[in-house]
Amino acid sequence: MSKIGRMPIPVKESVTIAIENGLVKVKGSKGELTFSLPKGISAKKEENAVVIAQDVTNDPLPRALFGLTRATVANIIEGVESGFQKRLELSGVGYRAQVQGVDLVLSLGFSHPVKVTPPSGIVFTVEENVISISGIDKMMVGDIAARIRSVRPPEPYKGKGIKYVGERIRRKAGKAAKAVGGAK
Image 1 (cartoon, helix red, strand yellow):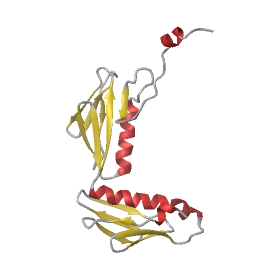
Image 2 (cartoon, one colour):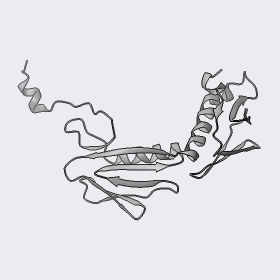
Image 3 (tube, one colour):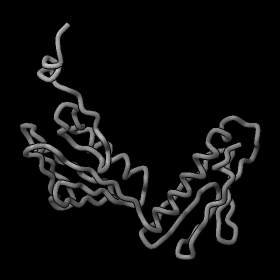
Image 4 (cartoon, one colour):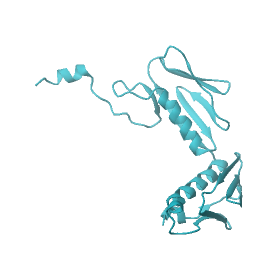
């Protein structure tokens, strides 16, 4: 049995939760999210917590989804209360990002600018070549950040590209540096 799945999820008083027919509805100051529980998993609201439980402990499918369900419900509760944010950093000569309306426009050395339209609930901001992606759904924020990064991932020779803030890129020596090292 999952150690994470058994832990109760703390709920602050500013968040309201309704659990009915396998659907968890969470409402907070930032917005509202819903999550449908997988078959074989149930949720109960207690005083200041939500407890996730398996209906049958020996069934392999609910057992596999037990910890994931608890983590997803916890992320939904945290998202409607405080939201999530991912930050991406542009590095490279001439690489720029700007927000036009709600869209993000990236100039990354291609023959054309790349336009990224956010899904509902996602907001882009740009400050000094740092792109901030924020929203209440953790999976959606992470997915959009990964899609933006995949437009021009950082390359290992010069480090140019889009990377997460704080991400370390392993640098390689170019062929000129290898030639100086000595030939055998």
